Amino acid sequence: MRVKGLAPGKDFKLYPGGGRDWDWSETGTRHEPGIQPADVEELLAHGATTVVLSRGMELRLLTDQATLALLEQHGVVVHVAGTTEAVEIYNRLAEAEPVGGLFHSTC
Image (cartoon, rainbow, N blue to C red; front, side, top):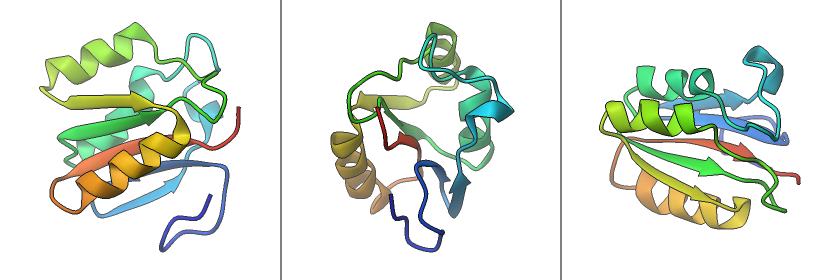
């Protein structure tokens, strides 16, 4: 994947004002049970009020229910989609609101 201002990579964590590589090993993320609450905490810390979660190109990446509960507790709007659709959603929303996203470009 290519993200403006970042080196090419396969997984990204984007938030209002920036982003970085998304290293799953930081939080123990695996395809199942999926995206962990700790994965989205950095997005919240940077002021994201909407979050886009990518499931990968083959929709193999799940999202842990605890992650969705955390985002709901913070009143965050969540979009979960395959990577191609997630990128489109993120790019559209980023023009008008503080959005964060987790993007998995493979499986």
